[in-house]
Length: 149
Image (cartoon, rainbow, N blue to C red; front, side, top):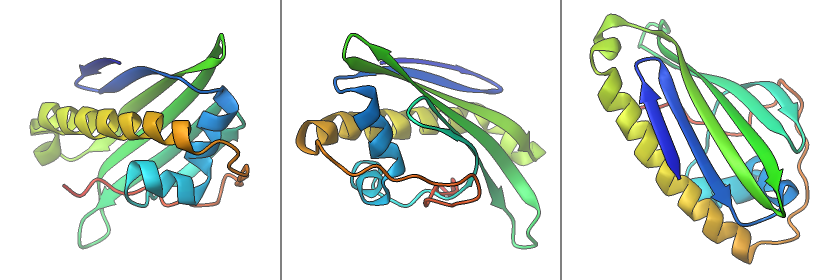
């Protein structure tokens, strides 16, 4: 797995030993997603292009519903000789100054969480072939979770 970070985001590239369609299904089937990611994810989908790409935005709001942090996620699924190169790009769209001061720590935490999650995804695709494809509209929310820790 390759990980790179900058003050503006994070890029993770990982080879998953499974066909692209199956890996995409593991991201779009709510039950499968909860098994490998471990918790619901909340957000607003901007693009769902099966089986090539998912794009969503999530945000963290304060008690008065002001956005403190807004992140854009793009997951690209590339077929490479029967396996999948998964590219996860996280971009910081907006953050308040207090969060900006801790951005390196936030991105480090995100890289660890996604690295662990993608390891679980690799294990899950080995035991879960044949999961039905779930199709979602751009306005459907599949449990993409706010960063609260």
